[in-house]
Image (cartoon, rainbow, N blue to C red; front, side, top):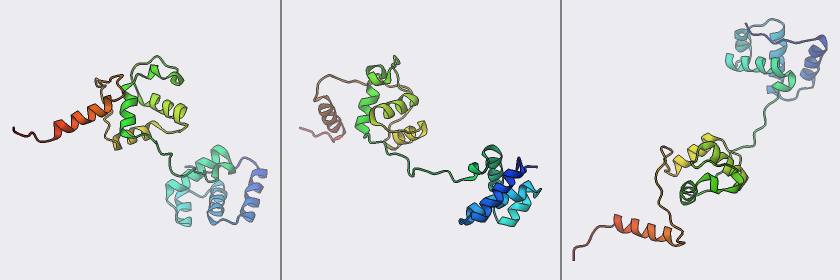
Length: 177
């Protein structure tokens, strides 16, 4: 059985005082759940009493047991995850380079991995994202994250324009003379 462990009478008084001062219903319920749990109420009884699922009650109790009343406070969120400002073309150009060519990455590695992409976005664009966010962004742009492919590049500044024109010509129907 899982119960809230109120360590001292002083801590118990602190909970009672917080209950009396509470103006938020959710906060009051969390404190009350801890108070009742410390007095021996089971998770299922608290779940029925407060109309919350047992997992939520367990979460409150675990958070309290680990961090006290402060652990019950809502974790503030910064909102939506940051947007990655790179286009498909920019991603392709980046992945065509070796990570060792980028000074701020401070690596001798020649192939990209998701951790390096996260580090690149942080150091070059000031964006903190997870590996999963990078993978999802690459997938959204239709860039497959599998085995490395040979990328043909050129120092010619018009190379991408020429390559795009050639791709367009390849896709257009052939005309007979």
